[in-house]
Amino acid sequence: MSYNFNFSIYQRSFIKPLKTHHGIWKIREGIILKLTNDLGKITWGEITPLPWFGSETLAQSLSFCQQLGTKVYLEQIKLIPDNLPACQFAFESALEGFNSHILKENKKSKFSYLLPTGKEALSQVKIGYQQGYKTFKWKIGVSLYEEEINLLQQLINELPQDTKLRLDANGGLNLQAAQTWLKITDELNNIEFIEQPLPPAQLDNMIQLNQDHKTALALDESVANLTQLDSCYQQGWRGIFVIKPAIMGFPSRLRQLCQNYPMDLVFSSVFETSIGRHHGLKLAAELMKGDRAVGFGINDWFKDKIIKE
Image (tube, rainbow, N blue to C red):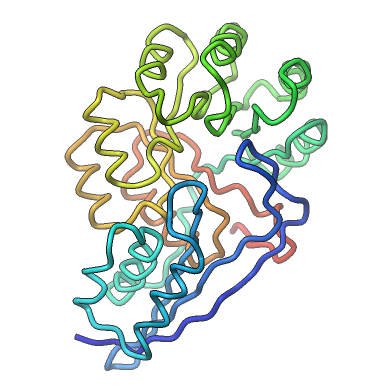
């Protein structure tokens, strides 16, 4: 079976550069792909690489698309290699579009609102809350420890009682710093979890911290693809898994893995457009258990906003 194939590259500028432990991010680039079957039905997919997270680069994605030409065959999609996980997700998601109706966001889904780093987070809490958000995410490990602890206390004072706060270190803390943060957060009631305090190579320390402290911990950089997700579960991680579906690989394999293992999942954005967002949220609706917020509250970060219905 073959499909007519077209693609185009896009760029989206952040309103304000996103600062994380990985560096400063000013422009989101990706590829929109279009498949057309023999009946003239059209579906869309989105390749959103995140190379510093372990996915392929935009250049590698582009090279793969260019070598396909104007036709792509089902067998070619099935054989996309594992070193191109964003391509795997985009093409299989597009294929699944032929067998489903127009994707609509689950209006019952809760979203986590990504706060800016530094003092600006204090004013954004009120804005996010007025928009209906009850879960907030704040990057740590970006500035000096003393500054961030002081800001955390101010954030806690600003947060309404019915809200939760996620702290995301992007693997930027050492063991001593992580223990210090956890001693503080263990005394706070509205910290939902700390995301990836230690680098991926320190999984044993992460497991121990998760056992020793009241504050829940989540893996993110440690589980950037399906192989890593499987490996961390096999090595004994039973905390939270933050999943970025757009760079995980084939959705069908993710479904199978989630059927095999009972995992506490949180699905999260890689700053994709509405196309990748819809495919990611569709998977989240299928695979997430419980009532945790999904990490897709990023509309306010772009000039060309995606309106949340």
